[in-house]
Image (cartoon, rainbow, N blue to C red; front, side):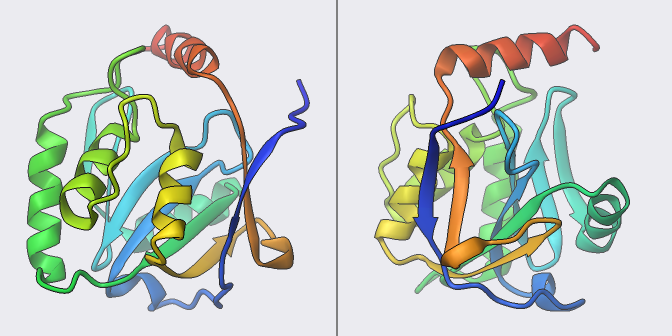
Length: 183
């Protein structure tokens, strides 16, 4: 099925180098054009996410980037403004604690987005709701000017815009259930 509706978010494009993801806080979007895309977070060079299989903490960005390049995964990394009070090390510890609340993805309950919503609600006062999709959270983050730069691999960010397919909760649940059958 071809998507006709996309959520668009204005961004400032940056050039991804070998060291870009080693310092700072980044939202990581994988399979950006897929329904749904996958979302995780990178803090000081460590990637964390929640999958059908469970928690994926402390993955090296070197390993992540190698996989992205080998599998030609359309990916975007959104650099987030540093927190005015907390260090990245503290934010990393807190995100890992939040991640522990979610042992794995469950249809109609928990998605890869759930720990990120908790994190951004707590540390950036985004006030996302339980029904928010990835594009809703990203629009809130962008509206608050928290996105510094966007970097991409295997994907062109045309006209300084990130476009993400719009999908429904029902489509999300169907996809989770289809993937879960393999595990």
